[in-house]
Image (cartoon, rainbow, N blue to C red):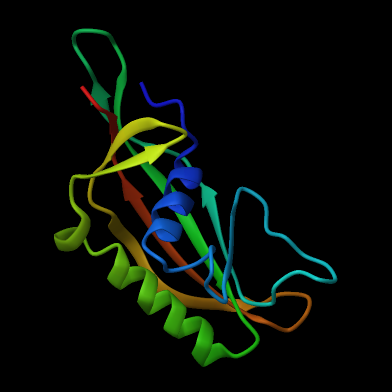
Length: 145
């Protein structure tokens, strides 16, 4: 059983890969989109969506599932936001990061390949007229055994 919030794990992955957060020009958060004065205008926010349950483990009854997320990208300029979306897709390419161990609060977790379920699209603008792009996808997590 994984105790971590899936969107938090993905924030950790993207930050570790140097895509957003940390020393980059992009802010990154999960579950709540920061807004207001003083907030970085270039932001990636990851939201958890309903899990994709594939069945149940016959030994302990735990669900076998893919965690599903929506990645939202907003920036001052549409081409910049679109470029960030392409960068995220490249960073999460399954052939590059399938079965890589990551550490969340000292807990080893196996992050299986990210599967895009809806590619990069622009869905409109926020109340500050910044373009918003989204990527929807799913991934599996498992504890280190």
